[in-house]
Image (tube, rainbow, N blue to C red; front, side, top):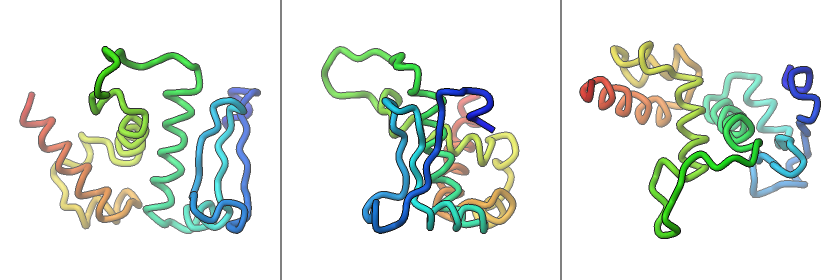
Length: 135
């Protein structure tokens, strides 16, 4: 669907032996997401970790493909929310597990209902409850 929305976007599936140490990545020069075939196959079969990986790379595409910097820094230590990896992780988490749907559930319920790993569900729930308390 993305190539129909953005004709400059592409995605590639590569064999595990071509990327043995990397599950997937976003190539902002080629405007493409490159995914190992085994990761893609597991995501299609419901692996929460692999679904999160694909959502994370989609986050890089959505948030970072334009070349626009999403926050400013004084050149010193990068604050957490300015880190592209934090941004992509947060995007993936909110896409797969929206706060308003999870804050009353347990990590096990979230993991099962939203097809994520238990660890991702724990982190998302912690952040959702923290955000709810802040309002």
